[in-house]
Structure formats: structure tokens, C-alpha cells
Amino acid sequence: MKKVLLAVGGTVLLIVAAVAFTLGSRHDNAEAGPAAQLTLAPGQLLYRTVSTGRIASVPLSNPAATPQVSGLRCDRFAVAKHTAVCLAVQPGTLPAVTDVLVLDDHLAIKHKESLPGTPSRARVSPDGRLVYWTLFVTGDSYAATGFSTRAGLYEVDTGRLVKTIEELAVQVDGRRYFASDANFWGITFAPDGNRFYATLASLGKTYLVEGDYAHYHGKALRENVECPSLSPDGTRVAFKKKVGDGVWRLSVLDLATLKETPLAETRSVDDQALWADDHTVLYGLDNAVWSVPADGSGSPRKLAGDAASPAVTG
Image (tube, rainbow, N blue to C red; front, side):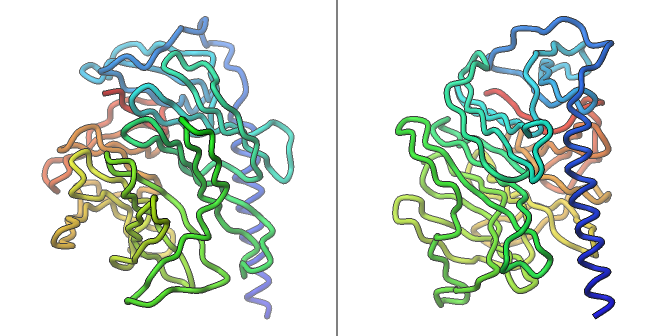
């Protein structure tokens, strides 16, 4: 019983620390220059500046260039086509409330939803018609540790909001899976806007789920896959694989063969990777954005400092 109380107490401390860090990291930086007018023009690497939370942009071909920094502040950020999504915690809200901001190609707000939770992941479908996110939520009675995730999505064209995908009918080992502790996170869509992948966590295990959005069902493909990211050609998934307590290894899974390839980044990466193209994976680590070849060769390359939540315009 003492161990359980210590574990729960440690979890609560981690939650409070995470919320405090998120809220405290979004202050103004006195050294920041005037806000730039950023757009989603092709060929850019955009990212969240860790020190201020403001969204910055550099040429993808020259990431060492001096960044243009906008006035938009986010805790998570993603783009595709002419759509962007910004997750921003409302200051001073406990439990935390996150604004999900759907943005146009000039980063102007098209739609806003306010949902309970702290930002975890954000993505936009390749066609720009769906935005989706994962929020970290406290207080669910079914969660033994007192916290869970909420993965939801918003249809840009229709305005339909799905606050959580927990009603997704999933098969595990060929049978419909039912569990009160099921959590989903890290959604990633195929170019067709229908096939998608996500992580299902339950009873101490994680699964890669392949889903059909139109029919709203899915099936587990394999265990120990977290935060999947589908390659532009739709054939591979970059993901983080748990190799120890709080330690993850970036890998790539071939969806046809289920062959797994560990990437050259050997440090623990707790992020949803992003494909810059069919050959290169980006990720945030140690307050910087890095790239690494997707075939397991080469070595990590630092693209930008004071940076997280990378996004690439096509």
C-alpha cells in the first residue's frame, strides 16, 4: 500500500511540475524582436521556441539561418497543406484547459475549441482537412494513477468535433477489445484522409492500431508502439519504442512486413516524430530540433536550438 501511495504521489508531483513548466514557459522574452508575419509557404521548418513559446520559421534548406519569429504562442504546433493547429494552455487554469486553435495559411484563427487537459501531441492530416491532438487529463476514475489521455480531432470542412476517439471499435488478436482503462494517443493519418494510426494503451501494454475513419473501427497490428507518425508514402511508421522505464528508442516500422529498424538516435526520445520527407525523420530533444535518416544509417543532426514541436511546409 505504501508503494502505491508513493507511486501516486510521485505521479501527482510530475503532473503539477509539467503543468507549472507549461504555464511558466509561455512568458514574454525581453530579447525577442518584433513579431514576423509568418505564412505556410512551402519549404519552411517551423517550430515552437522553447524560451517564449512563439512560433518561428527558418528555410528547411538552411535551418541555421536567423529565424523569423511570430507573435503566435503555442505549447504544441503542427501544419499540413494550408492548415495549422496550435495547442495553447489557458494561463492560470487548474485543472488545465487547452485552447485548440485551427489556423489558416497566414496563421489566423479559423476555429477555436477549449478542452480540459494539458497539450501532449498535435498533427494535421496530409490533405489539411483534419486536425487532431492528444491532451493529458487528470482525474479519470478508471485510471489507477489518476490520469489519462484524450485524443480528439476536428474536421476543418464540416466543423465536426470528436472530443475523444475512445469509442473507436478496436480488435486485438482478432477479438473486439473492451477495457475501462483504454487510452489513445498520437494520431497520424494517411494521405487519403481515411486510414489512420494511433497508440492504444491498456493493462500495461501499448499497441499500434490501424484505423478506418469512415467506418470508425480499427485493429491492433503489434505491441510496444507509441506516438506513430506515418511516412509521406504511407508505407512506414516512425515511432518511439519503450526499452526501459521512462526510456524510448526511435524506430521505423515497415507496415507491409512489420520489420522494425532502430534509428541512429540512441538517446531517449519522448516525442511524436515528424517526417520531413520519405527519407528523414525530425523530432524534439533537449530543447532542440534534430533530424536523422529513416533507414537507420547516419547520425543525428541538430537543426535548430531553443526549438521543439517541429513542422514542415510542403
